[in-house]
Image 1 (cartoon, rainbow, N blue to C red):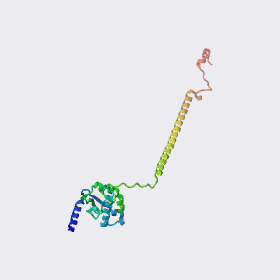
Image 2: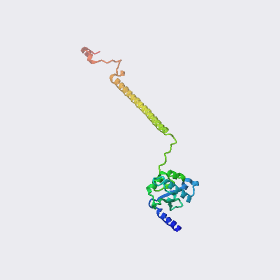
Image 3: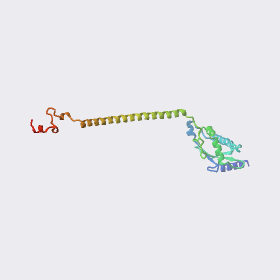
Image 4: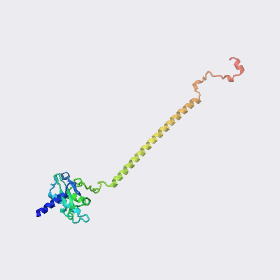
Length: 222
């Protein structure tokens, strides 16, 4: 009679915990990837520890303080360490709602990870979103980073102002020299237009202007 009772319990548990069953979650572990040569073997002891951690998490949920390790069922365990689990309610002989299990796992995700020396990437609850990683303090203080950025901006701005001033000064000097050249050319051209070259006059032979000659001087030969 006793063996029949255990048989019925096993059959009921098998029906409750199945892949893709209602309120079932798949877990995948990458122990070798996370720990390398220090990786441990996943056995029944590790399964018991996992069930204990899930029961511990469920006991943190209101009205689930009576959850026991036996209420957590595992099935379809593979050698590459993946399996499905559900949390049952023995009083009603059904699984607990998925949202309650998900909430409990998320609240205690870091505790579960630390027990198995894993993280959200190597201990995956496929239907449960990963928890946010705690903020890490930067190795360099933030004020030093801000000061460095402001200092670089000031240096660049100063350099641009200096280069702009040099360029404007060069343009100004170049413009004034061109104006001086133009003025010199205009002055030289005005001098030539308003004066008579000296070599055009014959100072020895002289030159007689007929306008100022009298009538006798015109008729009387020299």
